[in-house]
Amino acid sequence: MEYKVRFVNYPEHYRRIWNEVIDAMSECLSKGDLIARRQLEEFEANLARFVGTKYAVGLNSGTDALLLSLKAAGIGKGHEVITVSHTFVATITSIVFNGATPKLIDVGADMEMDVSKIEKAMTKKTRAIIPVHLNGRMTDMRIVNTIAQENGLIVVEDAAQALGAKLGNLNSGASGLTGCFSFYPAKMLGCAGDGGAIVTDDEEIARKVKLLRDHGFKRDTNELLMYGYNSRLDNIQAAILNVKMKYLSDWIERRRNIATIYDRGLKGVGDLLLPPGPTLGEYYDVFQNYVIRTEKRDELFEHLKRNGVETLISWPRPTHLHPALGLTKFKLPMTEKISKTVLSLPMYPELKDEDVRYVIDTVKEFYR
Image 1 (cartoon, rainbow, N blue to C red):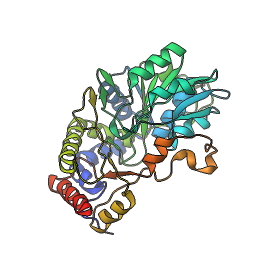
Image 2: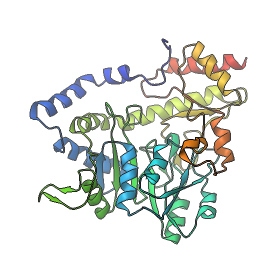
Image 3: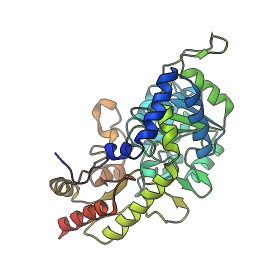
Image 4: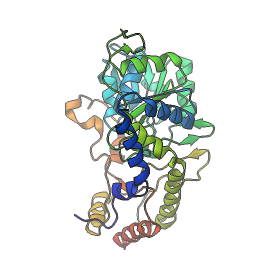
């Protein structure tokens, strides 16, 4: 159907930067810069600088960023990794595909990992924690890092939805062993297909991930140093991301501005539970998503659809309740409650104020 307000508007997004993107792609094609060339190196330097780490390694997806981080850190068979169920399945997949066992804990009302439950979930087999910075908000890394340091655990940050987020003086992705980002088109910084990266301050981890992404080859000596994968970030995608990096800070501020408009317009409406506001304490949220909660979620979803507003439900069934994954033993009451009530409203920098107000008015109409 034709929507009055799309959930994501790719055509408008690219219309605004069309010439720059086409020029960047043309340069790659005209010079034959397709794999592991200058544009990729520039993007890795730009990303590391933005996040505040020494190294960044471009990969073909956020999924592989998680997978290769755990692989490079030596996580494997016989190890347990603590994470959450309220996340895209890729977080848990990265644990399972490394031969390790996921230990799932619940989230809090803000949909971030309930850090008070970490130590209760730990066993002698626990080797790592994957906090998931969901919707553009950071998990409390101060507590996660303290627990990890006291118990000799590795921390891999799933920051796929939180590029640019902060908590106090901590940057999303910068305080774990690695931070993992996705450049899926709808993300904060999206390429024209799939893409991802890890960031780290650990030189050895960066070296290992670079080997793992390229079949284990050390290209300058043509040595095979390990078995690896084909997980390189394509040069054309890196070139597109380099163009977009120039606008990222402005796009984040626009998202925060839109969140403020939503906050003011939806405060006190019906039974809505709104996300933490953009000016709350030490948190600097970047609003990858603006997620509301309501007991009337399904009815509101249909009302908005009928009136031309495209929304998204992430995720109607919690990851751990898919029987095929073998995770149904975990009892996660908040995760299960949230999955029945969450609804993501349109949120992207190209949204006009009048579009945001239309969404607000349509929500209010439902409750009237």
